[in-house]
Image (cartoon, rainbow, N blue to C red; front, side, top):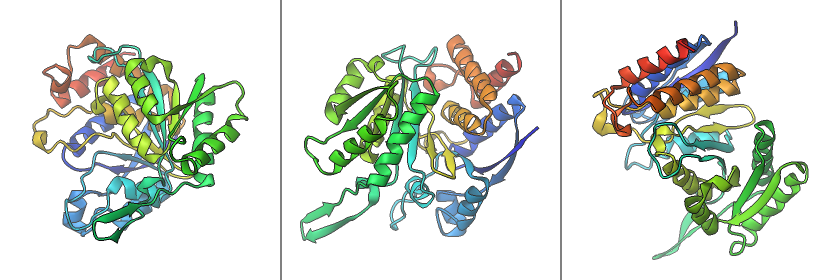
Length: 336
């Protein structure tokens, strides 16, 4: 049996708690892992004087796969976001956010099943900004042909492999005719290689409205960094919030799998944390590692326990502790 070497970043706040729960669930699948635990975030800064010690980069470059809990960035002192730094340093150009309705989770819709694919390395998040004169600032949006082509290719490849029917390119080319115009031009070029997949283009503001009115019309959406940051959270709100939505940041070599919720310092150590988002992120990791059957078993267990509604955490309306919920998932996995 294959043993997968994976970098483990427990994170800050409730990070270690949801990470422990996720490791227990992964163990129940029977898939074997060799974990290399490394620090990152606020706790790492206290010990190492940096939010991202070089050891973390070395480990991810060696294993090529990381499972990461939520991390905090110290306020003040000019510290860059841990998440943004990882994405840019490792060229994790694609942010993948599958969003689907879960049984038993209250939301406005019961049949959402869409995927947000976000370009992760440039756009307005390139961090190129300056003061022109006192009282006037400028931020530069960087858009390259290379980045546009590869994020479009990722979206269409993902759709083709998963049997998805449609890709929607989200843009503001009516205003940003050169930058977003290049994004659309590149997406159209890639689209020509996938005639079996339906294709449409939507202006970002119209797309946001359509997602709220009828999210069922969407399948795979591809967009730039800023639009993806906003719409992926909007999409999560359609199915119950960030606590039940997984995430992945994928590059040519390395991939980091993580939830996108915060560190929730107000509930640390109280056994109240909901590990669903990290557990579902781990299913994306399992698929990435070629363990699709194990991933499917975990998802079925999550659907079953949430659907039953008997052993769920407080944020979902239940009274179960993190450990109780985790134990219920493990029993569901082992019982088929």
